[in-house]
Length: 133
Image 1 (tube, one colour):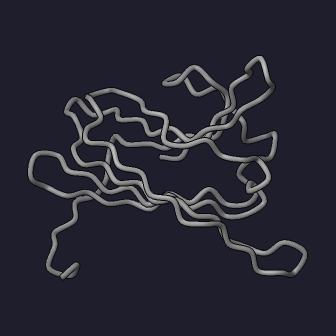
Image 2 (tube, helix red, strand yellow; image 1 turned 90 degrees about the vertical axis):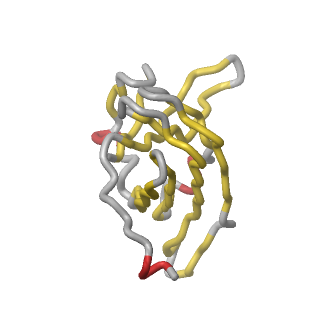
């Protein structure tokens, strides 16, 4: 049971949603950043969007991604993301193991997170976007 599992607080792991200019235009993607000096194993990331648009409740599909490992001080692109969902809350639930201990954290980019004032250079990936620690 989940209540019997000892979850330690997550440190050294961040999520970023960043934009990249390509030949076909601007593409946005979600990145996981491991700042720890040890690799992460069995990294599971679920994502979904939810909220209201013009008074109507909206939800996106839930997507699941698995990384067998994420090296120490490494970055991985998780998924592309369509800017049309930035009006929603975008939730990412990240679970992973370090050695035999499980870590678990929910990252939520709220609907106002992508206003131009919040877009900053993210040095770990060399792109502009929003960083969530």
